[in-house]
Length: 302
Image 1 (cartoon, helix red, strand yellow):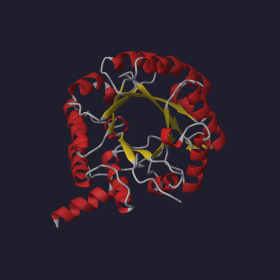
Image 2 (spheres, one colour):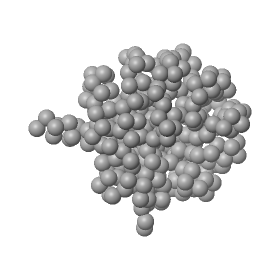
Image 3 (cartoon, helix red, strand yellow):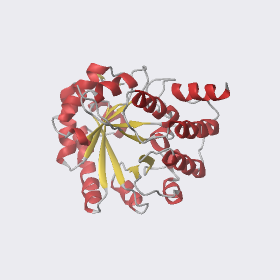
Protein backbone atom coordinates (compact mmCIF):
# COMPACT_ATOMS: atom_id res chain seq x y z
CA UNK A 1 0.00 0.00 0.00
CA UNK A 2 1.51 3.32 -1.03
CA UNK A 3 0.07 6.44 0.52
CA UNK A 4 0.19 9.77 -1.35
CA UNK A 5 3.35 11.76 -0.59
CA UNK A 6 1.44 15.04 -0.87
CA UNK A 7 -2.11 16.06 -0.03
CA UNK A 8 -4.09 19.09 -1.18
CA UNK A 9 -6.60 20.54 1.26
CA UNK A 10 -9.49 22.82 0.31
CA UNK A 11 -10.51 24.96 3.28
CA UNK A 12 -14.28 25.34 3.18
CA UNK A 13 -14.49 27.26 6.48
CA UNK A 14 -15.35 30.68 4.99
CA UNK A 15 -18.29 29.20 3.06
CA UNK A 16 -19.49 25.83 4.36
CA UNK A 17 -18.25 26.64 7.84
CA UNK A 18 -19.78 30.07 8.32
CA UNK A 19 -23.02 29.67 6.38
CA UNK A 20 -24.87 28.10 9.32
CA UNK A 21 -23.78 30.72 11.86
CA UNK A 22 -26.73 32.51 13.44
CA UNK A 23 -24.80 35.68 14.28
CA UNK A 24 -23.84 37.95 11.40
CA UNK A 25 -20.18 37.72 10.44
CA UNK A 26 -19.08 40.99 8.76
CA UNK A 27 -17.46 40.86 5.34
CA UNK A 28 -14.24 42.28 6.81
CA UNK A 29 -13.93 39.29 9.17
CA UNK A 30 -14.52 36.81 6.34
CA UNK A 31 -11.92 38.56 4.19
CA UNK A 32 -9.40 38.50 7.05
CA UNK A 33 -10.05 34.77 7.54
CA UNK A 34 -9.32 34.10 3.86
CA UNK A 35 -6.12 36.18 4.12
CA UNK A 36 -5.00 34.24 7.18
CA UNK A 37 -5.71 30.91 5.51
CA UNK A 38 -3.65 31.79 2.43
CA UNK A 39 -0.87 33.12 4.68
CA UNK A 40 -0.83 29.68 6.36
CA UNK A 41 -0.22 28.07 2.96
CA UNK A 42 -3.72 27.06 1.83
CA UNK A 43 -3.87 26.99 -1.97
CA UNK A 44 -7.59 26.20 -2.29
CA UNK A 45 -10.22 28.23 -0.43
CA UNK A 46 -13.98 27.99 -0.78
CA UNK A 47 -14.87 31.61 -0.16
CA UNK A 48 -18.62 32.11 -0.39
CA UNK A 49 -21.80 31.08 -2.17
CA UNK A 50 -24.04 32.91 -4.59
CA UNK A 51 -27.37 31.78 -3.21
CA UNK A 52 -30.54 33.70 -2.44
CA UNK A 53 -29.97 35.82 0.71
CA UNK A 54 -33.48 34.79 1.70
CA UNK A 55 -32.26 31.19 2.16
CA UNK A 56 -28.71 31.88 3.37
CA UNK A 57 -28.55 35.41 4.82
CA UNK A 58 -24.96 34.82 6.02
CA UNK A 59 -23.75 34.79 2.38
CA UNK A 60 -25.55 37.99 1.28
CA UNK A 61 -22.18 39.81 1.21
CA UNK A 62 -20.71 37.37 -1.36
CA UNK A 63 -19.69 40.00 -3.95
CA UNK A 64 -18.21 42.28 -1.26
CA UNK A 65 -16.12 39.44 0.16
CA UNK A 66 -14.83 38.36 -3.26
CA UNK A 67 -13.97 41.98 -4.14
CA UNK A 68 -12.14 42.52 -0.83
CA UNK A 69 -9.75 39.59 -1.06
CA UNK A 70 -6.15 40.32 -1.96
CA UNK A 71 -5.59 37.42 -4.29
CA UNK A 72 -2.36 35.48 -4.22
CA UNK A 73 -0.86 33.84 -7.25
CA UNK A 74 -1.26 30.07 -7.07
CA UNK A 75 -4.35 30.18 -4.84
CA UNK A 76 -7.68 28.99 -6.24
CA UNK A 77 -10.77 30.79 -4.96
CA UNK A 78 -14.02 28.89 -5.37
CA UNK A 79 -17.69 29.78 -4.89
CA UNK A 80 -20.84 27.70 -4.68
CA UNK A 81 -23.43 28.37 -7.40
CA UNK A 82 -26.75 26.53 -6.98
CA UNK A 83 -28.32 27.64 -10.29
CA UNK A 84 -27.88 29.80 -13.38
CA UNK A 85 -28.93 32.93 -11.49
CA UNK A 86 -26.22 32.27 -8.90
CA UNK A 87 -23.66 31.58 -11.61
CA UNK A 88 -24.44 34.84 -13.43
CA UNK A 89 -24.03 36.78 -10.18
CA UNK A 90 -20.80 34.91 -9.36
CA UNK A 91 -19.09 35.52 -12.72
CA UNK A 92 -18.61 39.23 -11.96
CA UNK A 93 -16.48 38.22 -8.96
CA UNK A 94 -14.11 36.23 -11.19
CA UNK A 95 -13.98 32.95 -9.24
CA UNK A 96 -11.32 30.41 -10.30
CA UNK A 97 -13.73 27.58 -9.71
CA UNK A 98 -17.44 27.07 -9.16
CA UNK A 99 -19.05 24.31 -7.11
CA UNK A 100 -22.35 22.64 -7.97
CA UNK A 101 -23.95 20.07 -5.69
CA UNK A 102 -26.33 17.13 -5.77
CA UNK A 103 -27.32 14.42 -3.30
CA UNK A 104 -26.86 10.68 -3.65
CA UNK A 105 -30.15 10.35 -1.75
CA UNK A 106 -33.46 10.95 -3.52
CA UNK A 107 -35.21 11.93 -0.25
CA UNK A 108 -32.49 14.45 0.63
CA UNK A 109 -32.68 16.00 -2.85
CA UNK A 110 -36.46 16.43 -2.53
CA UNK A 111 -36.27 17.90 0.99
CA UNK A 112 -33.24 20.08 0.36
CA UNK A 113 -33.83 21.49 -3.14
CA UNK A 114 -37.39 20.31 -3.91
CA UNK A 115 -36.52 18.24 -6.95
CA UNK A 116 -35.27 14.78 -7.91
CA UNK A 117 -31.59 13.96 -8.41
CA UNK A 118 -32.11 13.82 -12.19
CA UNK A 119 -33.83 17.23 -12.15
CA UNK A 120 -31.05 18.76 -10.04
CA UNK A 121 -28.47 17.54 -12.55
CA UNK A 122 -30.47 18.98 -15.46
CA UNK A 123 -30.61 22.30 -13.60
CA UNK A 124 -26.83 22.32 -13.29
CA UNK A 125 -26.08 21.33 -16.90
CA UNK A 126 -26.28 24.91 -18.31
CA UNK A 127 -24.28 26.24 -15.34
CA UNK A 128 -21.49 23.73 -15.98
CA UNK A 129 -21.57 24.49 -19.71
CA UNK A 130 -21.37 28.27 -19.16
CA UNK A 131 -18.54 27.97 -16.61
CA UNK A 132 -16.43 25.70 -18.79
CA UNK A 133 -16.98 27.94 -21.81
CA UNK A 134 -15.68 30.83 -19.67
CA UNK A 135 -12.61 28.81 -18.61
CA UNK A 136 -13.83 28.38 -15.01
CA UNK A 137 -13.08 25.01 -13.39
CA UNK A 138 -16.13 23.03 -12.24
CA UNK A 139 -16.19 20.93 -9.09
CA UNK A 140 -19.20 18.89 -8.03
CA UNK A 141 -20.11 18.06 -4.45
CA UNK A 142 -21.94 14.77 -3.95
CA UNK A 143 -23.72 14.90 -0.61
CA UNK A 144 -25.09 12.10 1.61
CA UNK A 145 -22.84 9.43 0.06
CA UNK A 146 -23.08 6.99 2.97
CA UNK A 147 -26.12 8.13 4.92
CA UNK A 148 -29.13 10.42 4.73
CA UNK A 149 -31.15 11.93 7.60
CA UNK A 150 -34.37 10.87 5.84
CA UNK A 151 -33.43 7.71 3.96
CA UNK A 152 -30.87 6.09 6.27
CA UNK A 153 -28.09 4.14 4.56
CA UNK A 154 -27.17 5.09 1.00
CA UNK A 155 -25.94 2.30 -1.28
CA UNK A 156 -22.63 2.66 -3.16
CA UNK A 157 -24.59 2.05 -6.41
CA UNK A 158 -26.47 5.33 -5.78
CA UNK A 159 -23.14 7.13 -5.39
CA UNK A 160 -21.85 5.61 -8.62
CA UNK A 161 -25.01 6.69 -10.43
CA UNK A 162 -24.60 10.27 -9.21
CA UNK A 163 -20.92 10.33 -10.22
CA UNK A 164 -21.94 9.12 -13.68
CA UNK A 165 -24.56 11.88 -13.96
CA UNK A 166 -22.04 14.52 -12.84
CA UNK A 167 -19.58 13.25 -15.46
CA UNK A 168 -22.28 13.34 -18.15
CA UNK A 169 -22.84 17.10 -17.74
CA UNK A 170 -19.12 17.94 -17.76
CA UNK A 171 -18.28 18.27 -14.04
CA UNK A 172 -14.47 18.01 -13.87
CA UNK A 173 -13.91 16.97 -10.27
CA UNK A 174 -16.19 15.43 -7.64
CA UNK A 175 -16.13 15.56 -3.85
CA UNK A 176 -17.47 12.50 -2.03
CA UNK A 177 -19.23 14.05 0.96
CA UNK A 178 -20.44 12.37 4.13
CA UNK A 179 -22.74 15.28 4.91
CA UNK A 180 -24.09 14.01 8.22
CA UNK A 181 -20.90 12.34 9.40
CA UNK A 182 -22.33 8.83 9.87
CA UNK A 183 -19.74 7.14 7.67
CA UNK A 184 -17.18 4.61 8.87
CA UNK A 185 -14.05 3.57 6.94
CA UNK A 186 -15.37 0.57 4.99
CA UNK A 187 -18.59 2.37 3.98
CA UNK A 188 -16.58 5.40 2.88
CA UNK A 189 -14.22 3.17 0.89
CA UNK A 190 -17.21 1.61 -0.89
CA UNK A 191 -18.57 5.08 -1.79
CA UNK A 192 -15.11 6.15 -3.00
CA UNK A 193 -14.67 2.98 -5.08
CA UNK A 194 -18.07 3.56 -6.72
CA UNK A 195 -16.98 7.10 -7.62
CA UNK A 196 -13.59 5.96 -8.91
CA UNK A 197 -15.35 3.84 -11.52
CA UNK A 198 -16.33 7.11 -13.23
CA UNK A 199 -13.58 9.57 -12.23
CA UNK A 200 -9.80 9.37 -12.16
CA UNK A 201 -8.28 9.33 -8.66
CA UNK A 202 -6.80 12.78 -9.37
CA UNK A 203 -10.30 14.19 -9.88
CA UNK A 204 -11.86 12.93 -6.64
CA UNK A 205 -11.77 14.38 -3.12
CA UNK A 206 -13.17 13.46 0.28
CA UNK A 207 -15.41 15.72 2.40
CA UNK A 208 -16.00 14.25 5.85
CA UNK A 209 -18.02 15.59 8.73
CA UNK A 210 -16.95 14.64 12.23
CA UNK A 211 -20.42 14.22 13.76
CA UNK A 212 -19.57 10.76 15.16
CA UNK A 213 -15.82 11.35 15.43
CA UNK A 214 -15.04 9.30 12.29
CA UNK A 215 -13.66 11.95 9.94
CA UNK A 216 -9.94 11.24 10.47
CA UNK A 217 -10.51 7.47 10.11
CA UNK A 218 -12.46 8.10 6.91
CA UNK A 219 -9.68 10.37 5.62
CA UNK A 220 -7.12 7.61 6.26
CA UNK A 221 -9.33 5.03 4.52
CA UNK A 222 -9.48 7.32 1.47
CA UNK A 223 -5.72 7.91 1.52
CA UNK A 224 -5.28 4.14 1.33
CA UNK A 225 -7.21 4.20 -1.96
CA UNK A 226 -4.82 6.87 -3.29
CA UNK A 227 -7.21 9.81 -2.82
CA UNK A 228 -5.06 12.87 -2.10
CA UNK A 229 -7.51 15.80 -1.97
CA UNK A 230 -9.82 16.66 0.90
CA UNK A 231 -12.17 19.41 2.04
CA UNK A 232 -11.59 20.56 5.61
CA UNK A 233 -12.70 23.52 7.69
CA UNK A 234 -10.48 25.68 9.89
CA UNK A 235 -11.37 25.36 13.61
CA UNK A 236 -13.93 22.72 12.60
CA UNK A 237 -16.36 25.48 11.59
CA UNK A 238 -19.81 24.41 10.50
CA UNK A 239 -22.45 22.51 12.37
CA UNK A 240 -24.59 19.71 11.02
CA UNK A 241 -28.17 21.00 10.73
CA UNK A 242 -29.48 17.41 10.69
CA UNK A 243 -27.87 16.26 13.95
CA UNK A 244 -28.58 18.54 16.87
CA UNK A 245 -25.46 19.87 18.58
CA UNK A 246 -23.21 17.85 16.29
CA UNK A 247 -19.90 19.09 14.99
CA UNK A 248 -19.63 19.77 11.31
CA UNK A 249 -16.65 19.60 9.00
CA UNK A 250 -13.45 17.97 10.10
CA UNK A 251 -11.00 20.60 11.38
CA UNK A 252 -8.21 21.50 8.95
CA UNK A 253 -5.76 21.62 11.89
CA UNK A 254 -6.55 18.01 12.88
CA UNK A 255 -6.09 16.70 9.33
CA UNK A 256 -2.83 18.65 8.86
CA UNK A 257 -1.44 17.30 12.16
CA UNK A 258 -2.29 13.72 11.15
CA UNK A 259 -0.83 14.08 7.65
CA UNK A 260 2.39 15.74 8.85
CA UNK A 261 2.74 12.99 11.44
CA UNK A 262 2.54 10.46 8.60
CA UNK A 263 5.25 12.28 6.64
CA UNK A 264 2.73 13.56 4.06
CA UNK A 265 3.35 17.06 2.75
CA UNK A 266 0.52 19.65 2.73
CA UNK A 267 2.45 22.90 2.22
CA UNK A 268 0.61 24.28 5.27
CA UNK A 269 2.18 25.95 8.31
CA UNK A 270 0.32 24.41 11.26
CA UNK A 271 1.09 27.25 13.69
CA UNK A 272 -0.24 29.90 11.30
CA UNK A 273 -3.28 27.72 10.64
CA UNK A 274 -3.96 27.49 14.39
CA UNK A 275 -3.73 31.30 14.53
CA UNK A 276 -6.30 31.60 11.70
CA UNK A 277 -8.62 29.26 13.59
CA UNK A 278 -8.12 31.18 16.84
CA UNK A 279 -8.94 34.43 15.03
CA UNK A 280 -12.35 33.24 13.82
CA UNK A 281 -13.14 31.32 17.04
CA UNK A 282 -12.42 34.47 19.08
CA UNK A 283 -14.75 36.46 16.83
CA UNK A 284 -17.50 33.85 17.25
CA UNK A 285 -16.75 33.85 21.01
CA UNK A 286 -16.32 30.12 21.33
CA UNK A 287 -13.63 27.51 21.55
CA UNK A 288 -12.12 26.06 18.39
CA UNK A 289 -13.68 22.80 17.25
CA UNK A 290 -10.19 21.47 16.54
CA UNK A 291 -8.61 19.12 19.08
CA UNK A 292 -5.14 19.86 17.70
CA UNK A 293 -5.66 23.64 17.90
CA UNK A 294 -6.90 23.32 21.48
CA UNK A 295 -3.80 21.30 22.44
CA UNK A 296 -1.41 23.70 20.71
CA UNK A 297 -3.06 26.80 22.20
CA UNK A 298 -2.95 25.25 25.69
CA UNK A 299 0.72 24.34 25.19
CA UNK A 300 1.48 27.93 24.20
CA UNK A 301 -0.11 29.14 27.44
CA UNK A 302 2.00 26.67 29.40
